[in-house]
Amino acid sequence: MKNIIIILTLGLIFSCNSPNGDQTQTNTKESYYGDLINTSDIINISEVKNSISQNGKITTKIQGEILATCAKKGCWMKLKTDEDTLMVRFKDYGFFVPKEGVEGRNAIIQGQAYYDTLTVELLQHYAQDAGKSEDEILSITEPEYNFLFEASGVIIQE
Image (cartoon, rainbow, N blue to C red; front, side):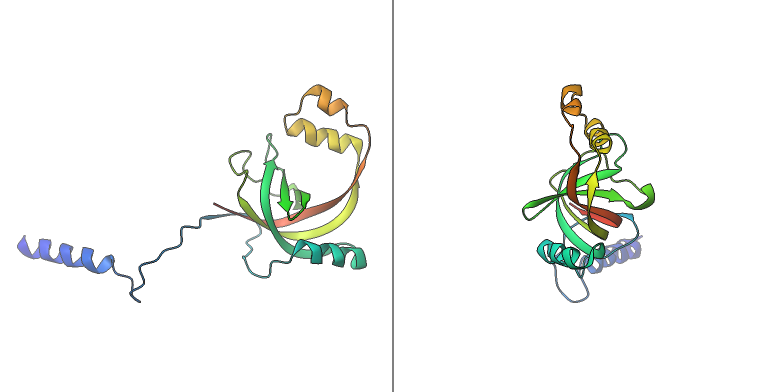
């Protein structure tokens, strides 16, 4: 019995020490959605916009702050990147992000960036998904030409 207590005590002592003596730990928790992506090679949004204006649709990776997600299914999110608000949809409707609780968190997204026109019907659909009032939904009467993103993978950091 005495030997068991000694072995358990030694095990506890050694399990608390890291092999390199470094006691610091990172507290960043990441959740992955869609394709598994990493946090390297993130491109500045101004570079992305410049490349799109020259080449049309491009594949890239950017990051920003989550402003909102679809409250019904989590099938889209709005991302604040520098001075822009970016509408992010998910490739082939193949995955979803949390419907609530991620606002204000950092997200890294990888996929296709492009400019396109959103129809009145689609804008009204997004407003309905976001829980807007009927008056707010009906006040949408013009299509919008926007900077859009179709993500194949998303990382949400806490």
